Image 1 (cartoon, rainbow, N blue to C red):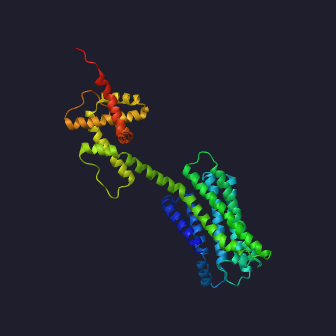
Image 2 (cartoon, one colour):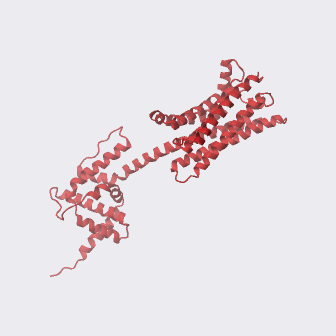
Image 3 (tube, rainbow, N blue to C red):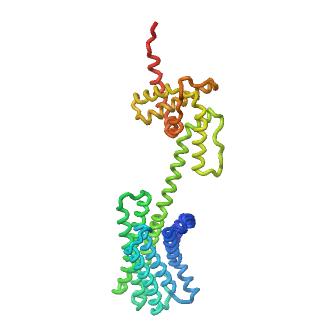
Length: 395
């Protein structure tokens, strides 16, 4: 049973830890502060709702079941915070319309009123027997405790319904970033699962009113549903940030890997490579590899045969390659030829006139990808050489 409490607590804490550096760096952003507060409240709900924590709070205060209004208050504050965040997130912080301000004031007043009412009802109730796991159903017929249970469940259900509706309406909005859209989908499913939590709790309480025993819905079904909901909500909040971060890192590593064939070819010219730095970031490693390649290509320009590049391009087109692919293959053939020329005569220059390395320096990624397909390069090279071999000789 405890797994229903510590797993979401760990996930929510991880989400908060991921968001925390951004929250601290952009502390003036009220939306980020709201996200941090929301995740902190969610963590607090599961920490204080754990049976061990409930028993400890009751024992420390000396008041049986006082953990109940505390947990209900945290849950109510979480619900209100969700509504405020979604309203602000959906409408944008620049929206200062009277309707938006009125909606946010209404949420604050309503859920603050619920929190106050929860404590008043608990003070009026008679609940002397400590119940760590089944307080909702055990006191389902007790005056004021009955109303307290209904109040927090109805407040929770109302917030979930409104939040879910706002989220799913937002998901259908055109032009959303893919990571944001998926984050909203996880949030929508997570909040939707809370309806199952509320339905299980309310059904178990109503069963007690009619003399039936469906306590398992409240004690066995509702907690894991709430745990799964919290995990999905945490994923929904961190996915737009973490997903974009991982995507950017993957693109950097992919670009670095794609440059390897051209990098190795340039190493054969230079005789050395980029010095390894243990703590270099992916951005720095990519920049250093690009810089090394361009630094070697630049002096290699005097060995470039522009006529060979033009003929190789025509040959690649004739072989059925697309213009962009043909351009990259022609550049690869020309660079390999320049490397060979330099190895044979390091001090000789290109006599075909006016080599332009601008394209080579700008499209090193495409050239490096072409070098990964030696069969295509050999086919272009053979096609380029064929016309010269077939030229008739006249006396």
